[in-house]
Image 1 (cartoon, rainbow, N blue to C red):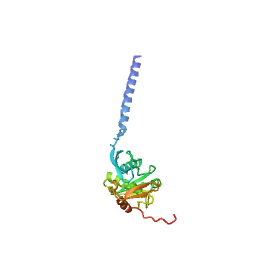
Image 2 (image 1 turned 120 degrees about the vertical axis):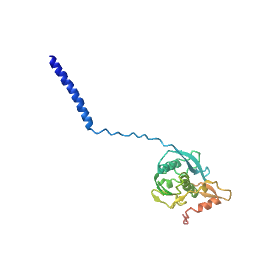
Image 3 (image 1 turned 60 degrees about the horizontal axis):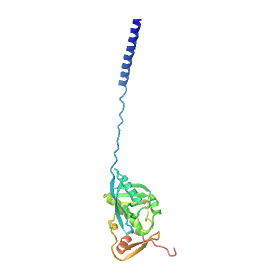
Length: 224
């Protein structure tokens, strides 16, 4: 009986040792498990920008400091800036982009940025030569100040070059920033310009001369 027990114990011990050795051999024959690196994304710090909106009387552009989401790629930064511009002023200044406007695509080429807007930019714009001027130069000045290497902006509507924004200010060529529109009009003969919404905007003679440089010369047939 004692011999039987010893034999059983020996077989059990042999089985344990054999199992351990066999498991060790199998582990050695398998390739080491690939370690998957854990990437921890850090939040980028917010970026301070200067945006340009119309002043409360709609006569010139006025800057407003804002914070936008942090970004690494300039196209993402530009999109965030345009979205902030579209959302409107936080200081009760006049909006320059209809809130319905879609920002479809942004392309960078040397010192030129092409911004493709949805048709809502022109469809929902109030119109009027001075109102269109404020929109065009709000875009050019906001981009030019915050991205100094961008000297010109081409405004596209639904991917197409459009002759004017809404019948007055030409946008068929790239526009350069012009910070003269950020200065209040000087005292002088006051002109009155009527927009498509029926509202009037006061302009002095100097501002009128500036407008004539970029406004489309449209002839209206008699009787229309």
